[in-house]
Length: 140
Image 1 (cartoon, rainbow, N blue to C red):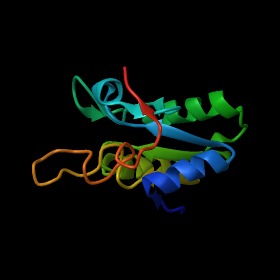
Image 2 (cartoon, rainbow, N blue to C red):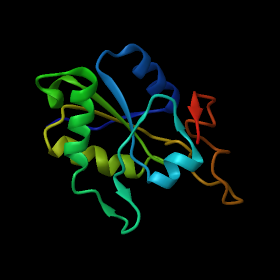
Image 3 (cartoon, rainbow, N blue to C red):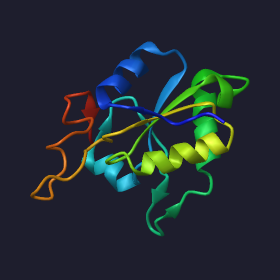
Image 4 (tube, rainbow, N blue to C red):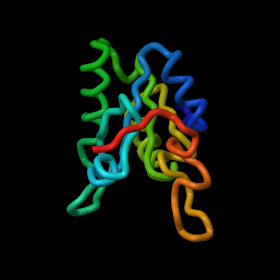
């Protein structure tokens, strides 16, 4: 069985720029994606979302559709490289394991996530994450 690959935000950005067939999926809730911001070019598919905060039962199928829609692969689970990002890198590990169990072969996750861990004042974005490293992002 394949293994989930961990990447730093900068390594993930480089990977996405230089790997054909790679796709960045932001798996945070809709509110996080819209109001906190998200990486430029990412596709939003929530792993857990409001109002019930339960795992999305269609997550794997939605990822497969997103990959197929972008690259028109005959075998998206084998041909695509799916890079996952969440807030701090924890949910993306769970979601990545689910994709691997469903047959995806190249699944990577961004260890620090979009905002990183909380600092001593319980603020995110000061210790790590996509934004902290100055990578391209936007918000609504």
